[in-house]
Image 1 (cartoon, rainbow over the protein chains, first blue to last red):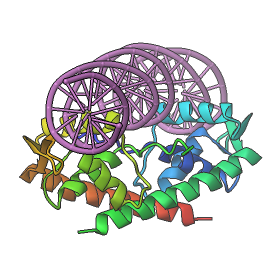
Image 2: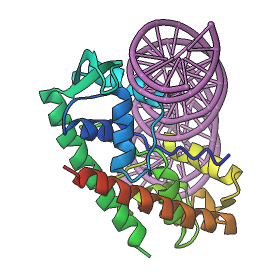
Image 3: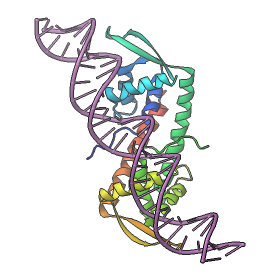
Image 4: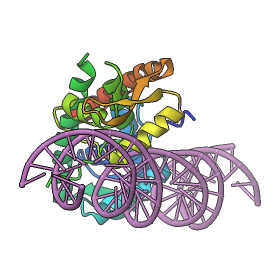
Length: 109
Length: 109
DNA sequence: ACTCTCGTATCGACAGCCGATAGGACTATC
DNA sequence: GATAGTCCTATCGGCTGTCGATACGAGAGT
C-alpha cells in the first residue's frame, strides 16, 4: 500500500552514471556510493542494481572487467565509456529541465 | 519528434493533484492544465491520463461527477477529496526531498 | 567445520506508461 | 441532412522497470 517506489524511474541510470564518474567501481560499491551521494535518500538493492548495470552495459554506456575488490573478493568493475559520459550529460540536463518544470508547476497557485 | 522523455514515475499523480487544486476540471482540461503548468515540458496522453484518474479515484483522492464542459460536451469532472489534498501535500514534500537529494548528488564531484 | 560477510546474479510478481484504437455526441460546412 | 471535424471518455496490449526473494561462490573469522 505504501509501496510508493523509493526510486523514480529514469533516476537510477543517472545515479549510476554519476557514481561512476569519479572512477571505476564494482556493483555493491556503486550501490553504497549512490546512498552516500544522496544522503541515504535513495537505496538501491541488488535486484534493481544488476539488471540496470547489464542494461546499461548493453547500451554501451558502461564497460566491465573482472578484478579484485578492496576485500580481496572477486568483483566486476564498471567504468564509463565515452558514450556513457555523453549519456550522463544528457540525463543530467534532462533532469534539470524536469526539476525546473516541476518546481514551476508546484509553485503556481 | 519529441524524444521519449517519458513521464517520470510518480510524477503524474502529483501533477494531476496539483492541476485539480485550483478547482474541479474534466479529463482533457486536466491534461491541458498539466501542459500549461509545466511550460509544455510534460504532455500526458489519454492513454496515461484516464487510467491514472481511475486509479486515483479508486484510492479515494478524487471524486467525480458528470457535467457539461465549456463546449457543451458531456464530461466527467474530477475534484480533490480531503484525502486527495493530504496526498498532494505528502507527494509535494516527497518530491522536494527527492529533488534536493538529486541536486546534491549531481553537484558532487 | 561452521558461519559471516562480500559480491554477483536471476526469477517472478507487480505496476505504470503509452500508442493505437474505439465510439458517442455535439458543431460546422456544404 | 449528409459529411467531416472536434471534443471527451475509455480500454487494450505491449513494453519496460522496480523489487523482494532466492541462490551460489568464495574469502575471512572463530
